[in-house]
Length: 226
Image (cartoon, rainbow, N blue to C red; front, side, top):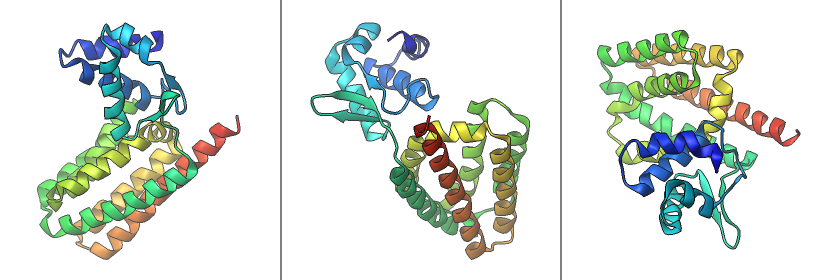
């Protein structure tokens, strides 16, 4: 698969186990939209490109299946997981519930350093333009407010949910209108956290996440209609 050449070279250069290199290359290509939902992943071609056995490629597929990025279909093989509108609605509801729970647990423990770090992430979002930096700083903002919740299992589940949505989040962050609305929400969320208004900020956070979910559904439907 020539389309993976750059991703393959970058992953191999990290000098890590073959399974991890393949998973990293495929993950990168999926998250950045190079490999799109529903696209087949040819096990033999990937094995040849990485100079590994097909068993090793299958192991990488299993890793990505666990992350919700790849679907292995009996007698058909592996394909990039294609989210449906119902999938997005379910993920959005789970994200809203889990993130509100994390924020509620963290708010009493937040200090000025945490608020300053969140404010810095908002400022960084205003300055950067490339999608990688936008995604990273957006995640940094939320993590600054959740880090002290002390709920690592919840965070792990949340990370997986976010990963499954990332290809679509990248499309949204490329839209000026979405970025502005998201930043307005971030500032309001931070201010409510400073004031320790737990119920109000949880309500706003849920609305913020639900709006993102609605935007992603719109993107999905627009793609399907083409």
